Length: 615
Image (cartoon, rainbow, N blue to C red):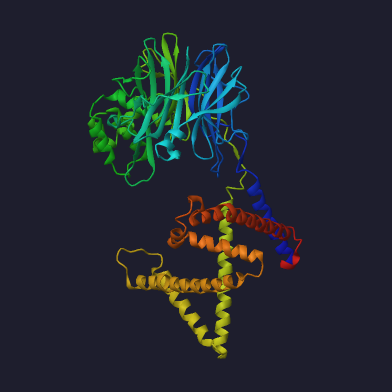
């Protein structure tokens, strides 16, 4: 009976862990179930197309998948997702955009075909601009890298992983393509932070505008674009170019490590695409709470209001804290930021939104990507808004403007909703409970083990057996450790009590010293065993001895001194590195793989009760 019970429990637990490992945490759901971002408006023969980035992140997984989706509209107001989404996703045959395509910039070619430039995020955390083509804008092929900032950053001696490309906008001209991208990279002693420019005659070979980059640098004194530029869109305004961009400032609440990224939209114009001038009305657009707060007052004392906001204690309710941050950025008057006005700030805001509570709007607290397009006598903007300060639930909205400066949202509801949420398989979500059960079982096993030791050593003392003094030492150590562990072990007072000092002496003074002594004895034993095994009994032992001597000499200055006169590749430190990484690492991996396969086979035999001798 006991054997059958052990076999049954082993099989059920093994099956649970196998299914939890093999099956995903969630199944189904849309490619854009987590959030939507980086919209791109493109004119088509039958209306307007909206390409955007969809983000899918499975529950309990760190694997974030990016893909490009498509929505279509005939009137610019009503939008519907196209069938066959996503249009472009991750590919097993393209490692440069292994995490998926991001920030699509789609260009309509003169012959009616489409070219998509997008940011590819590789497994090496390096951002690259990539290109794909399509005859109908639905089926894309030929993805390839066209340029990155790796070479620029490496030549400047900077860290390649900091060569970030956050957003991309591409224009088609008579002579080729012009790309504007929000990025951070190094060139010489300078850090290029802002909007940079690159040109290409064919969309394949690109040349960075090194003489003028960044063509639009961030201006920390503006406050709202203090940290970085996260998205952008460039259109022809008739007299030149208009650049709409999302400026972000990251703030940290006092008493909290969670940052607040508050983003607003700015406008800059240029006659040549190189020299840009910011609009005096900046910022011109933002989340819903920012728009309402700015409509209440228009006070230029932004800096003083921001300082007041920084001093607000973290006990203030989270929605009001976010609202106050945006109020400070919008230049809200000082009286609303006074302590007495904090209590009725939420009610004042609600009075401005009779139709819908302000904090429930889809773009209440956060704004990210945008795309602007000329439409008749005005302009239309597709943007991404979110109800949370973290911006993890972005959905797509539409705004219109007659002059490109003053914008009005088309609706309080999003033009496009996120995809369906994936269904939970309940395996990963129940893993925590399962682990807690095993912790309880482990605690019970520890108690049984402690009971067995007490019984064994107690019996030795009662019978007066030889070496019972060690059993008495066991009881003394057990009692002292338990008393000081439960009394002072979990505390960290500013002034150490006597009991806490004794606790530190037991654990950090005695136990660590005993452990170091044991490791020292083992080291001498291993050295003795190595000496015996290094006896030159055969060719293999001689080869092992030569390799060991070279590796040891490569770790000490004496070896480097003895071989300093040799060519660099033959110096002992480089030979030691070659042995370690070229020979030793593959060998260790092979051994580990073999041991893992052996352990897996043994586990399968135990799980399927094929080896009952161990049960």
